Amino acid sequence: MDIGNRIKQLRMKKNLTLEELADRCELTKGFLSQLERNLASPSISTLEDIIEVLGISMASFFKEEDKEPQVFTQEDFYVKENNDSIITWLVPNAQKNEMEPILYELSPGSKTFEIKPYEGEEFGYVLRGKLTLVNVSRDSKTDIKKGETFYLNGNDEHYLSNESDKIVRFLWICTPPVF
Image (cartoon, rainbow, N blue to C red):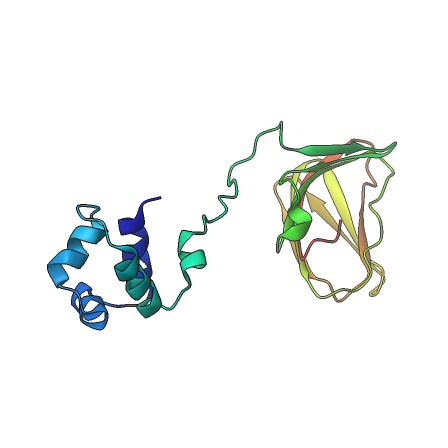
């Protein structure tokens, strides 16, 4: 573990200068600077003092932060094929996140499941074909063509359908996840 860098990150997060932290820990500014650059090593007692001033526990200081992946490849995707659709989850375990992006392929004459009113929002981008947004609550239909987007809140019951004779492919992102 890079103790010096960890001390520096926490100090900066608390908006403390080297001098302010040194004064509160009864250390010299020069010694603290050497610690942050890993040119010196603190005693356990000194490290405890620094950590206490920074307002965290020794356990929190040494806890490694989870490094969640930020880039995903096709090997990470989860694909579910039905008779009338192919749904590809683009981010593994996205249901634990604030939003869930999926790639959806819908066969001619098919529709997605109906989404009941919920607290959230949806965004979509049509990659191929023509999609129809059916708002059940308002008894309306809107066509969305390739290159067009849709954005809606979850106040209305709705679904998406493919009323054409070709496969429609679109990116669909919901927050929070509803799939």
